[in-house]
Length: 213
Image (cartoon, rainbow, N blue to C red; front, side):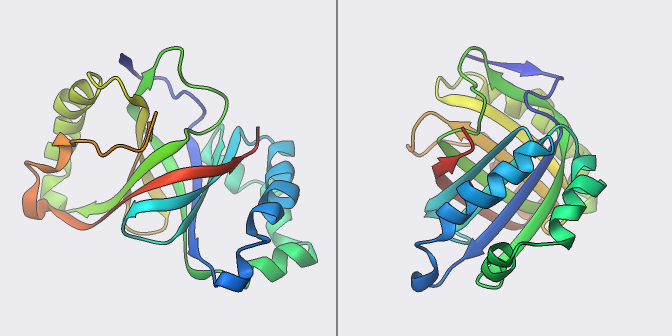
């Protein structure tokens, strides 16, 4: 059973990059990530990197996630230097992205974590919900999330980790990330009572293809 914790399991910063790719550009996508992108970011202190294919839901086909100790890692010189002086392969591949969306995200606790099941990288299956809220509904959402939703999800034997983020860059501004043990569909009580207060909701299930370790 998962437990609710006020301490983030793998840092408080997350970079999420969604994109599509033309068929001819897909073969070199993961080799580029595993050979160039992931090692460079792990060397400057990132905690974990993983790239996913969408298997259900809506949104772009590919998602790459980078976890770091804090969001400040994305704005410090070490990371900004990588972005400012890109290698030719890096610069060329970014030009191939179709429908890219980039989020820099700050952890907002508490989170749910399954004791003894969370390893050093991101889960094999993840569900991502991106959405906005009516301003008048934000407080109610926060109360419901902490007092009802997290305890309900803690009863699931399949949840490895569940946490939420607020977007510093990228829209919609609310971002929920759940790690699961397998790809089955899950009954989710979060959206049942929110109705029209939720705006621009986009939900998708992804399967991990590569990770940094």
